[in-house]
Every structure is written in structure tokens, then in C-alpha cells.
Image 1: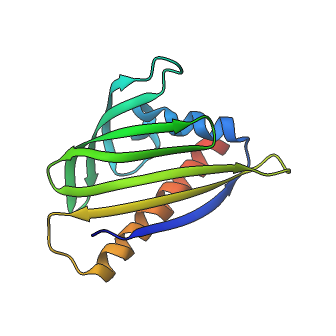
Image 2: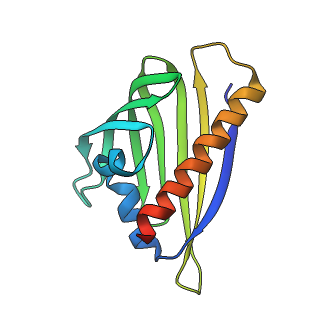
Length: 145
């Protein structure tokens, strides 16, 4: 069973601006190093946010095409679960946003990853930490630019 890893970062922007960047999945290849392509497959009718999307990942040794299912809680949280993939067995996560009084937003990223390739638990946790750290820094840079 995959364990969860999490980390947080503060972004100088309101939660709605941060969530708008997170929700624009098709723009991910412009600002995330390992995502090569995203296709939104379905959207929720009420707010047009993605319900399901297909990703092409190229993270060096790990290359895969996978589909995620999304659940949105306004500008407070987004959760996703893996629907199908080739190499990945688990890719579940969330972004939780908490707006601060200073007009900034604390973003917490939680992630559970498991792949079909045998890998020591310590190596998996280290890889998750790198993925999360990189994703939060890239998100901060994109929102604040």
C-alpha cells in the first residue's frame, strides 16, 4: 500500500487565483517539467472544471500515460485519483488551499504514488518528496509571475 507524502508552500495570491492555475490542466506542459501533454476528457457542467483528464508523463526513468478523476471543492481543495495507467498503480493526491489574512494562500500538496516497478519504500518516499517539492515551486512561480 502506498503511503502519503505532503508538503506546503505559501503563494502570494488569493486562493481563487491559485486554484485557477491548478484547474487549467491543459496548460501544465507550459510550466511543469515532467508533464508533456494533458487532454481534458470530461468537465463538470456546473463550473467547467475538469472531471477526468489524460496525462503524458516523462519524469526521466518514469514515463507513462495515465488518466485521473477529479473532485473540486470550490477554491478550497481539489482531489484526484488514478483511473488507469500503464506503469503507475496509485497516483492519488490533493491540493488544499487556505487563504491567509495577508492576501496569500497556503497550499498543501498531498500525494500517494505506487508504480509497477519494484522500488524500496525509502526511494518511493524520496521520489514523492521531490515530485511534491518541484510541483509546489513550479505552481508558486506560475501563479506569482
